[in-house]
View 1 (cartoon, rainbow, N blue to C red):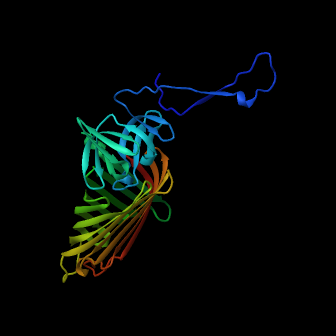
View 2 (cartoon, rainbow, N blue to C red):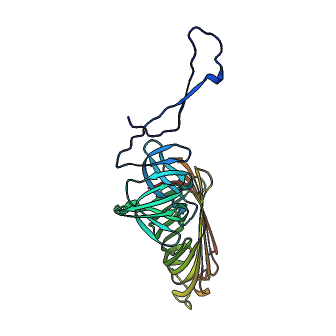
View 3 (cartoon, helix red, strand yellow):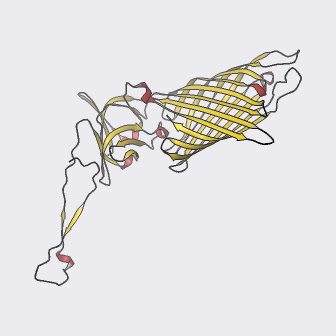
Length: 374
C-alpha cells in the first residue's frame, strides 16, 4: 500500500496489570515510535518538509510571481493534495523525476535532475553535477517539449444590459496570455468594448498588445519590442500603431506581489477616421513610452491587477495618452473568477473630426463579468 502523505506519528502504550484498578503512574508510560516506509515509484518526484511531512507527486517549478526573485516559492503537484505552493526555505529534501532548467543570480543556467538537501541544490546531468546554495536560485522551469505547457492564459467576458426608457447593451471581452522560460517572457493581450444604446452605437474600441522580454540580470530585463495596435471610433482613431523598445526592472517580486516597470523610446503612427480639410488624415511621431504592471494576491481567493501605459507623442499625433486598467478577480470555483474591470483612457490632444468636433479627452469603462483560466 502506497502512503501519499506521512507525518511523524507517536503511539502511547500503557501497561496496566489486569488485577489492579489503581491509576497508572505517569512515569511508567512507555512511548514507542511507529516506523513506516514510504514507497515511491521511480517515475515520481517527492519532497519532505522540514516539519517532517512527505509529499509525492511532480515538481512543477517556480511560481510565476517569484521569477527573478531570491524569495523563491515552488509549485508541487501532490498526488493527493493537488497543487501546493511551498517556500524553498521550508524544504528539507526534494527529488525530481524529470529534468529542469535553472537560472542562478549570476546569470548562469543549468539543466538536469534536481535534488535539494541541507539548503543546497544539486543539479545532476549525466555524470556531471553542480551544487549551489538554494538562495542563489532565481528561476526553475520544467524542460517540456509541449509548447502549450509554457503558456498560461485567461479570457474575460462581460455584459451589461438595461431595458426601459433606454435600451442599452454593452459587451466587453479581454484575452491575456503569458509564455515564460528561464530566459524570457512573452506577453499578449487583446481587449474590446462594444456598446449600443437605443439602437445607436455609442462605443466601439479594440486594442491588441504584445511584448517580448529578455532577462538580463536578477531583476533587470530588456524589452526589444512592445507593439500596440488600437482602434477607437469615438476617439476618431481609425487605427493607431505604437512600437517601442524598453528597459525594465522588477521593483517587487514576492510570492503574493509582483511589480515591474519599463521605459524606452518608440514610434507612433495614427490614421484618423475623419479630419478637417486643412488637417492631415494621418500623423506619425517619435514617442517615449512608460509601462507599469502590478499583480497582487490580496487573499487566496482575491487578486488585484493594475496595468498602466503612458505614451508621449507630438500634439498633432494626439499628445500624451494614459491608459489605466484596474482589475479585481474573486475566485468562484477553480479556474473561474467573478471579475470587475475599470479602464480610464485619456488623450491630451484628441483630433477633431470633419465637422470640427473634438472627442472628449477622457473615456471611462466599468465592466462586470467572469474570467476563465485556460
